[in-house]
Image 1 (cartoon, rainbow, N blue to C red):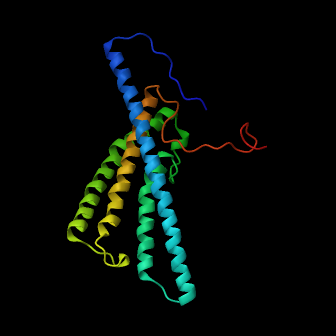
Image 2 (cartoon, helix red, strand yellow):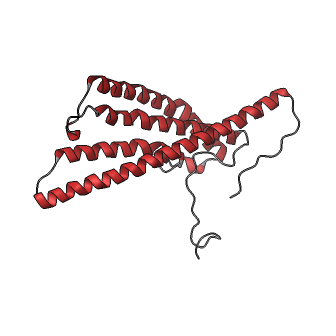
Image 3 (spheres, rainbow, N blue to C red):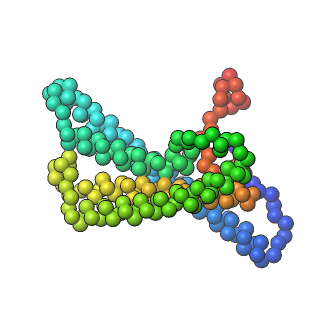
Length: 212
């Protein structure tokens, strides 16, 4: 669909012009956050999925051929799965791809939906992300300074890399929350066509762009 265009505003004073400039800057910020979260999340997800498939295949092959299990491979699989989840959660929220247990949201007006999402981002999601980033980064730094060595990686001092996926992934979620909050504020100001987050939309069968 064509990009949403807000109606041309009437001539206004300096205060209104400043407000319009702030909204334009907020719109640019949300789009930049969207691009960065999308690029980083997809790149990390595809790399992690490929590595997880390779390690899991090797683990299964060893079990079937040698009839022995490998605790080291299991630990690597767990670490890769953690990385996959942490680097995907921000993108999932940005695209409304996460599970919602909500029987009220779809029954309220779009403006109410935007207010609820905005309040949730500012009052709940952003503070939780800040706490996770702080403590996650502290844990990763402690592992780095202490030279923690996971058994799965032949005793190499890289346990901090595994622990760093928590604050890194949470940072992407925080950027997604900022993007969603900004877009809902822009919607409430009449500068966006719909509240955020919005999921990917695909034409259904029988619709103009779908197959009959």
